Image (cartoon, rainbow, N blue to C red):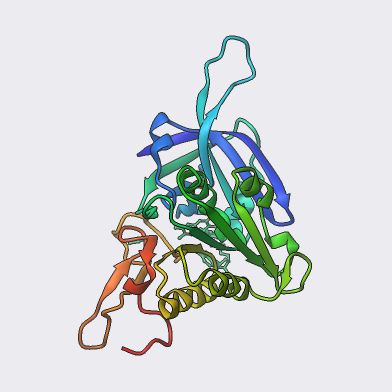
Length: 275
Ligand SMILES: Cc1cc2nc3c(=O)[nH]c(=O)nc-3n(C[C@H](O)[C@H](O)[C@H](O)COP(=O)(O)OP(=O)(O)OC[C@H]3O[C@@H](n4cnc5c(N)ncnc54)[C@H](O)[C@@H]3O)c2cc1C
Ligand code: FES
């Protein structure tokens, strides 16, 4: 679906990280956690290519004017890394954005009652908030959030408000455990006897480590990949990654945009993994 969204708020929530709220069509309320949007960050042709962003949240808001009825909104959480995200951060209330979505596959929630383990690195937390909102309805949820410094660990208060138990780790020790979030995750799995189901999003190195932990401990694990995308609809093949069956003789490629971005971690071939 293509639609125009009007910006309601665009605020820097931590140095270099922004949260944008905008109007949305009612169809966005049924977006699956993990699905994404292709956003035209500028109405002109520069940059020509849309940029992909996860759906951080959807819901209803009450417009301020008298007699108004509640309207659907959607939110994105984004990190300024280049031209497109820089342009997004310059936008203001009432500016319009052209969006395509929701696209791709979402997370599979798994059975109710089971411990749900969410692992996010930096802005990888973006698609995990909507997931947590869904999972807390019928399962205990724990979040493991990591970053280089405390500035990279985002929106923890929002997760706590949902009733999620939060564990944090930073590489410089400025928040939570000093070290990698995967170390904290392993301690928790040691404690629970490898109970639960993992949902992860973040830098590739972190996803690879989380996938290895899931495999070693026999804990089901889904990952949301953030490959480079040009079309978001399976046409350009710019986003392909290798599936678990890949070899020189039998190529097995997956499109992150249409087969993913969420994959079962065992369906992918991770760098350095032997055939
Ligand atoms: C399915 C999906 C969901 C995403 N969700 C979010 C989200 O919710 N929030 C968010 O902040 N970002 C998200 N991203 C990443 C986001 O799309 C990129 O950061 C954005 O496109 C960069 O655009 P830019 O014009 O600012 O950067 P560019 O000017 O295009 O690039 C600037 C620098 O960033 C690097 N870069 C660009 N894209 C990526 C990428 N995908 N992964 C790693 N490095 C990259 C480039 O190599 C370059 O060094 C998502 C990506 C995908 C595929
Ligand atoms: S982004 Fe074009 S095929 Fe995936």
